[in-house]
Length: 288
Length: 321
Image 1 (cartoon, each protein chain N blue to C red):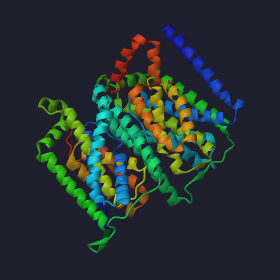
Image 2: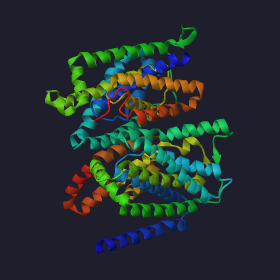
Image 3: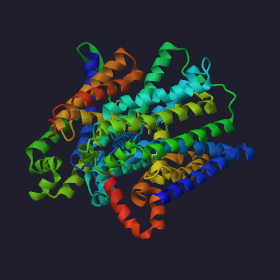
Image 4: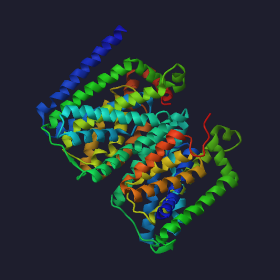
């Protein structure tokens, strides 16, 4: 039971990060390997707002998320658009964007190291116990889960119930065909990239309320998010949420039953199973 | 054809002279320059081994640190019971076996899956090794005491570099090398003319991994104390990718042009501004993509044949598929 609840909370945060990445990769076709740094940056922003301006993390969401949206829009417009224009086919864009986002990853990491150093940070927010089925849990974790769920509902409604969201999904399916039905593909790609960055930042703010973070941990989160995206199927929102929960549960189970040092081994075990049996994702159909 | 031959003889002669000069370095200096030469030799070996696989296939492998750490651990665990040469060979075999397993799981799929998988591979092996050591042995670190000095390490690395260049050259001339060039240009065509695409990639990945494992084994005596965080340091994988791409991966000797300047620069930065190394790596990646998409070797080619430069740029853009 303990594993179920802790795993679900972690899964909620993972899902936000993975949704950010799946939008960036599925719609904008950019494999953003600096996504984890985006998350850590949001952690530090939340920490800084709490310490310097006494703004609590839930209020901080309303500041950090729009800021991340603008920052990612700028990254897409300035850094990535020249590559999208230059690429003659998708393979080249893939290699170029992997290399550039690696560069971004190291630059962001370097800047954070210079400002905050390599130490671990954490702060107290709603660290009061809540009793659920005879066990105590931190109120901050429950709040983080609630906020994550609220954001999924908003995102799901946006993607499946609005014109703009439908256009976004059309670009994910086929950018060329989307262009033919008068969808502004470059604009949609930039929007999806920025929205993905904003979701990841939201995940970062929530994560910082119950997790110890440092400047160098972004890569691990990028990797987990990538594995979740592949498990769920690229661009698939429901798949990403389900895969995030599965991964977080498997990790929590291994950490508490076997050894906390082996969480990555658990992640990789799942990843290999998916690659061997369902490389198109949990809900994906076989490509023809 | 005869002209090709004489060019090959020239290359061989230049390579032999270069090796001889490098091997003579310990006779003149045994301090800073020897240590810098060893650093350069390490990256020449690693980047060239990396290029054997990633050059023709365009798959970006970040598994270097995993193979390298396995090499070090093989020596660290066995140094008290087995001769060094046996351990070096074993390291190659174990690294190749890991490469085959990873290759079989991921190389049938698109390049992105491979990048992600190799990104975490070093971390995965590190966790498993740490777990095994804390649960089944007493200490996490291992000591490697040998009679080898810095100069012996340099000589072994140079010998390994010679073997890697020879292997790369032989592969290029073989059916496998020909198959790889076709796969690099168009994988669909390769499949239709009857090339076993997945298997060719796995073989090449295993060869590349084995050499990296051997390099790790050779370097174990230099570090003397081996522990998981340093043996499986993920930054190594990134450095190898940057240096190889900076030099250019279209030829076997391309990485050499990236390794020498970058190692000297990195050495300078980490000595004077230790907190700025990740910024340097970051800017190097961005610079490669925007300014040198084909590496230094691309520039050299353009300068040598200005009229062929434009066409070369077009074909290499196609080859990146």
